[in-house]
Length: 194
Figure 1: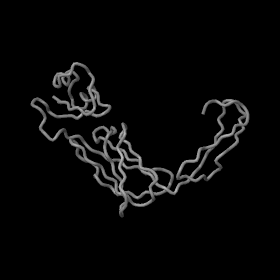
Figure 2: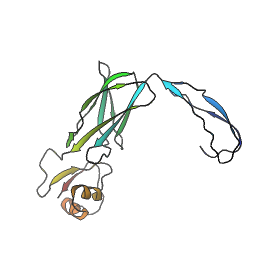
Figure 3: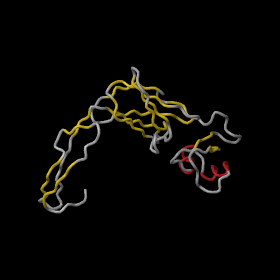
Figure 4: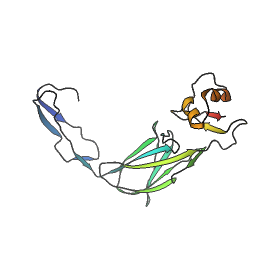
């Protein structure tokens, strides 16, 4: 909050769907001491569960964007799908508490490190459960081009410098092997790793 002047301030929260207040939704706070924060806590409860799913690269724990994740009640029901964001995260909200099966759609060039299907039990605690799915990059389904030790599919956040460190080569060697004139690389392109 911005700095507030001395006096009485009225604070309120905006109710969110699926949540029930435990404390009052409005408070009057009397600010009487300069540079001292007054603490106000709004508490709510929910009848629903949620789960945060993180898709990670097993190599460096970096988030993997663009992966399709599905969640379905373990004993039948409608499947929901979501796609991981730029940090490798997707959230499923408003779930009835119970057992769910979480699965990922495997992408070309990746091998699962954690199981592709996991069963979790979700509770209505007001805090999302966390599931982490990890994969490691295996290159493409074809052999790397001649002179390449590996093939690497560029993902968001990769740089020539980070890839050179990861694969034990140099930025200049990567540029030569891929015919690059600048240090710019784009997600979704394939690089030869010499």
